[in-house]
Image (cartoon, rainbow over all chains, first blue to last red; front, top):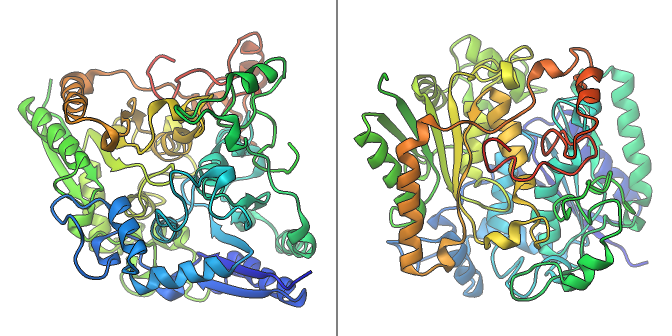
Amino acid sequence: MAAKKVLIVHAHQSSGSFNAAAKNAAVEVLTAQGCTVEVSDLYAMGFKATATAEDIKGEVKNADNFCYLEESKLAWEQGKLSDDITKEQSKLTEADLIIFQFPMYWFSVPAILKGWIDRVLTNGFAFSQDKRYSQGVFQDKKAMLSFTTGSLESMFSPTGINGDMNVTLWPLQNGILHYCGFQVLAPQIFWAPSAAAVEDRKSMLESWRTRLQGLLEEKPLSFVPLDCFDEAAFQLKPAVHEKHASEEFGLTVGIHLNKPLPPHSQMKAGC
Amino acid sequence: MAAKKVLIVHAHQSSGSFNAAAKNAAVEVLTAQGCTVEVSDLYAMGFKATATAEDIKGEVKNADNFCYLEESKLAWEQGKLSDDITKEQSKLTEADLIIFQFPMYWFSVPAILKGWIDRVLTNGFAFSQDKRYSQGVFQDKKAMLSFTTGSLESMFSPTGINGDMNVTLWPLQNGILHYCGFQVLAPQIFWAPSAAAVEDRKSMLESWRTRLQGLLEEKPLSFVPLDCFDEAAFQLKPAVHEKHASEEFGLTVGIHLNKPLPPHSQMKAGC
């Protein structure tokens, strides 16, 4: 097996944090396996989070009615994106696996990481009308979320106060990672390390180290292939819908066909 | 009825955009009704999106292991939060209704708006262990999302390629707005205005203006009251679970009890 390249996009302010320890574990274990590991430490880099006209070198096309989606696409085509974006795009192009390491803020990624997503996954570079989902630009790459929560696991269940974590993960894993074509590996969720005993935090990191040994061979999560949808309205084709009619569960969290959600489908491969 | 105060948190780069027109319509119609309307125009303000130690005046408590959740709570208690945060918190405290106006980026809010959420909704100010969800700090206030999409409505359905919009809205409406106690009004979704004819964009804005006339009297979306959960593990109480056992649908999108999701529950009141 050829040596793999890994990019870790890391979003915690402190090098003493549990998130930093999880990032360091990934660097160590993957490097020991022969991988080349690059880290984008967003706070340390002072990474710009906001999508503005400053992301484009020179004049924009339509200053009076600036549309980031269009202007950034044009700038990418013309090599006019700002250097910080271009640099991250190069790292992404090189990588076989991208790991996003962050503390969950408000049921999602911290703003600095959302800024990386908004700015680096440029229209044209990371997706296009023709290249999305299972036909996406990055279909030969893998990506995964690795994050800490403030709440206990039981609170993020279908009977818990925060609701099913699979629902919370859908916009991130389907709407960002799978949208760009990535094969999405199961998330690594560190449940409430700040509320855990030192020993338990250690064993969380140990099990992450163990998982990292075989991470690159893991099967990705399941999503619905693009050719199951018609090309006009992007609706599930009648044949697919009918074929699935007698099944107990929906196809995925989002494409649930008004059936119960398939359990754990955003958290475990093969669900 | 006493005059109401409205805060619009606006996140678009251009004053010529459809989002700006939607924001302007809200300012006009609500002002004409006697409301006092304040606008936080995040890009125009150059709003800082990233949650860093600079948000705290003076020394932080634990520089070696900086934890934003804890440090910002302490800074709020001691009046040491940075002025830009304090100013937004004052606006929020004054407001009866908050409207978030933005283009959907990657199945969520743009990073600059996520930054407002991460930084302004400070631990202690906007929530605490005891004050969350239906017992939340802002239970006397209303809040809503008003946003544009790039995709057509049909694509965000339970059989569409992007999946059910109700799923995508759950982390935002439950995990942020309802978490802080807000009564969440149905979202105003402008489906793919950039793909629409001029006449259709006009009629989208007209229907928003019509809705704005009665907005303050609308019933909010339904969520599961906090007292339905036990206080130890925050699990649905057995009595509530049993009472709901014969129902066709789950309680909400997230707290679905492994049943089909209640249709439109994040998009229409009374669902």
